[in-house]
Picture 1 (cartoon, one colour):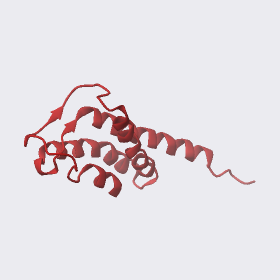
Picture 2 (cartoon, rainbow, N blue to C red):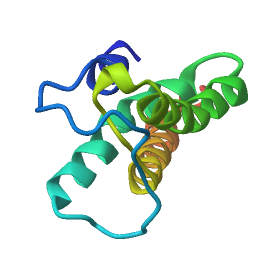
Picture 3 (spheres, one colour):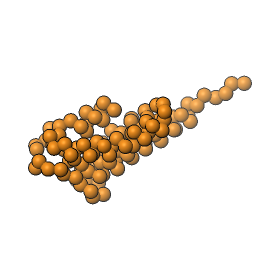
Picture 4 (tube, rainbow, N blue to C red):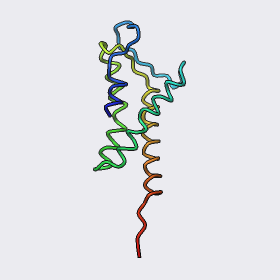
Length: 116
């Protein structure tokens, strides 16, 4: 979670844009598809780890809600010099889902077999 916070909730190193809330609500890949892939990959470990945490559904739920909270903070806290984007939320939630899927597969592959 620390890597996710460091990557998403720290001030942007890029030139400042107009001091206003900037949010995009278009469902597109955008100008930089690599950024979408990065958003997916950033949240895969969070989904993976949340599946093995206890209580499971609390942590998985928190991992799914986190992208919404992060994007809201990016859009509302002007000092961070960031904007919010609905496609970032979709990519982040997809990353959580991929992580949970990998955790389920890993659990099935390494399930202890009963001894006789």
